[in-house]
Amino acid sequence: MSDPLSLLREYIINKQPVSHDEQSIIIGELRFPRSTVTAYKQDRGRGDPYPLEALYFLVQKPHLAGAAKTRPYNDECRKASFSKVLLADQKDVLAYLTGKTETSQYLVSIDELAVLAVPAAPSDAPSARPADADRVGEKRHREEPSLDLTNEDIKAAKLEWAAGMDERALAPTDAGKTPEGRGITDSKEIKATSSLFVRGDTAVTRSLIDRERYLITRQSCLQVHGKDFSAVLALARAAHSAPAGSTVDVPPPPPPGNPGVPARRDRYNVEATDALKAAGMDQLLLQAEAKGSSLLSQGQAGQQAGQQGEKRRGAASEQRIVVVPAAPSSMVNLFNVQELLEKGLYKTMEEAKAAGAKKQDTARLLHEEEGHTYHYRVINNPETLKRDDWARVVAVFVQGPEWQFKKWDLSYFGGKLVGLFSRVCGFHLVYAKEPIHENIPKWNVNILTINRNQRHLDSQVKNKFWECLEDNNRLGSQAKGRAQSRA
Image (tube, rainbow, N blue to C red; front, side, top):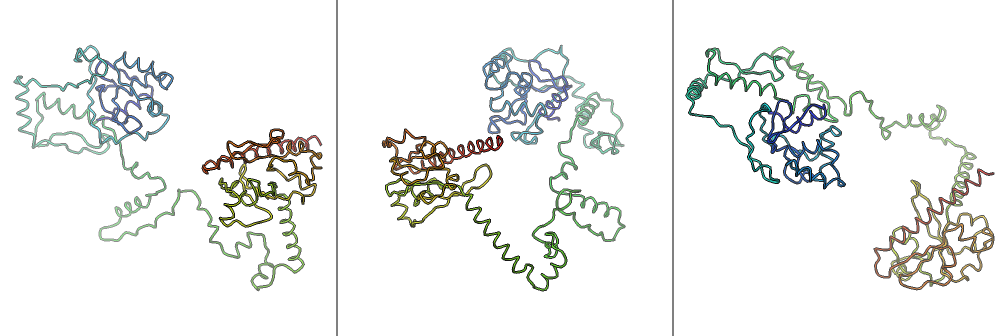
């Protein structure tokens, strides 16, 4: 018997007519009761399967799906006496039934469901629907067909069928006559009966077999992603064609991977000679390497060492600089700045020293920005910076008093604090609910608030610091690019 959900989906995708009446959903020549259970489970797979009428009505009213149309959709379902699809399932149901997705994760195995399908009756057939079935929410009961056992012809036909039941069977027919390769025939010993009951039952059974559809075939079982069963077919052909009593050589399995795709080169299993050739070294250098001699002269080695030293010095000169106060009263210093800005954990100077932090001249920070990892150097003695070094200063932590900047060389910024904070990110760290210094509102600085007891909030300070710094770096890069374009 056909799966009503798959059949409904096939007809909708192919734009074939699907209709309904008071009791049934009519799909082609098949009539399914409205309450037929489908393989689609409610509430994203957590509830009972949907009845066929709910899925049918939703696909007929796709414009009513969605949260904005919940009330009109419920009203339409109530007026037409149809079950409704939950809002959480509407999008997935429409995508599956209209063919936008091949399957749904909320489908259950068809073997778990028992679906009844009967041939569609003429439209003028009398309706057997009870009169009170129009009420909303009432469960519809399927009425089973019954036989009038008072009919003498039916009684005689049943007795005749029971007498010859052991001699009649489902017998295979020639392959190729039907997709299933089987049919219904009578035994050779049994002559054709003239009973209407027997002929009618055989015709119905044939029609059911003609409508059977394969859910799993040999091809679908052997189509596994990443697996190749061609060796199994080759072995079967060899065994079939080999003479009796002979042995069959099993062909080696194909290499893993998709057929027709060349295998990737293993870069970890390469000979040394091949690796040197791939690096562009000629035969002379290969021979020298085999004899154990040095590939580079002393002059070349010294030159290469000098170049590497210059690269290291150049990389150090390109590091961005963050300035923190040197005063012991400062909340941020070289003892705790790394924990705060890398791990999002604030410690006072006393707590950092108790945890084993030692006094150091600089601290290092690593931060990933737009896919690149940048190195930051944290200092507390900006008096040692040259004028050109101030171009790499990106952040300054301030306490508030102006004596913090007394010995700073601000000539790069025009000799004024306004010029410093217009090009460098200024930050002021303060405890929550504590007053800030009177100079802080006068300067263009960002206030970072630390809670005294709730350490899980320290990560917000870290995030705000890097967000402000990234925005300032981005604006600085854009201004620099515009200046170069004008030049």
